[in-house]
Length: 498
Ligand code: BES
Ligand code: MN
Ligand code: ZN
Image (cartoon, rainbow, N blue to C red; front, side):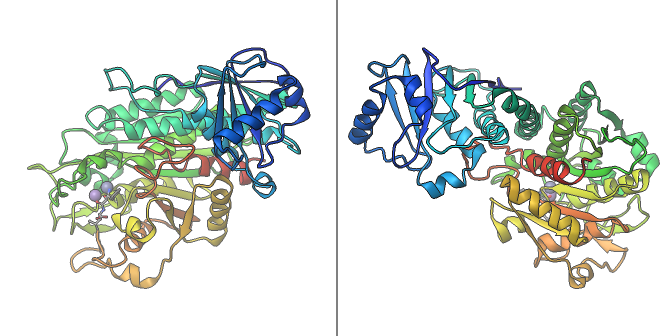
């Protein structure tokens, strides 16, 4: 993985050298501790610099003072927090991301202290999370010197807080989550000639180092299980399919039913025989964003030793045109026994999910299932690139996901499931067809998946818009967003750990 950032915690007080990051509201006042640490003259210097640069302390703005006279620091970086109202509802990951992006030195001390501040250990951990997520960039394949600025990225931050050891403990959790998000981003960003199903499975297998049990199923096993829908997608590719089942048994009772996450892992989606047009087809290397999120979430849960029994299952295939590829009009038999008429080979994600979902619910009897998939362009038309679509058969589960979404800022919007969508996928020749026509594409896709869910609480997150090339934010500048890891980790933390 790309070089990360080291974050340490220390007490508030003088630091002596290096870069110092401090925070002010729109009154530009310093806390007594910070003022004292910087020495006499600091407040005056700041006031003069702010006036000449028209720095007003607005939220997420900054003022840099290089070689500040009379202060024992290479550079002061002053970050605005805005009005009193702004300061009452700080987005901590965003603040950490912003601060990390503004530090120009290799190392900096960050004084998380301002007049009236009360920075909890959880706040400091969220700040650290944002900093870790912001500095990630995928440059493994850049052989030339990095552009000016990128190269000078911060590598170590010391967060100065009232209670360093409590903040340190809280940040162990956020470090695990950050690791999961970065792993997911890395998988999404990798090109499909490198990250094909077998290699994806190999990377998922690395979770065994964290105590995750990982089972990799190849074509023989998938055939024996009867996964005819998933294998139909894979048959046009020279790359073999894999299904990976990851188990984290962190709960007190190993026999307690697990929760289950299921991901669509199409390493490259060309559309198959119903081939996509050329424009933007390269984005389809990210069609495994759901699977990446599941692997990242399992990484996070295992790294922080979450007290939960969880299954992560991913179906990994490549969808290619070929003499052996599935065709429109083919009828395939899914593991559930239900038959599917292929109308459009580009509606392949639901075929993969149908078999993996069926396998998970029959083999593991989970408490609930959440699937994540870059499933439809239609969800992007409906909701854009900043919010995922949620479909669910269970109001209680949907409410928990909505709460975790609210808490992390990974936005979801619940979409309807009505009988008309289900009717739209009835087929003349088989039990169902794999597309439901032009209208309501995200909903008919969700209805298709629903036909493979028995009496289990289930939610489907269509993440086609958010998984990749979403709007840059304070905590993400990467194409592959790693969307959903923070949401699922939060869902587990708030509801399923004793
Ligand atoms: N992987 C695509 C959906 C997608 C589109 C993801 C854009 C991310 C960005 C999916 O397999 C697909 O091709 N869906 C089709 C379904 C249609 C053929 C019914 C679509 O959305 O056009
Ligand atoms: Mn497709
Ligand atoms: Zn796809």
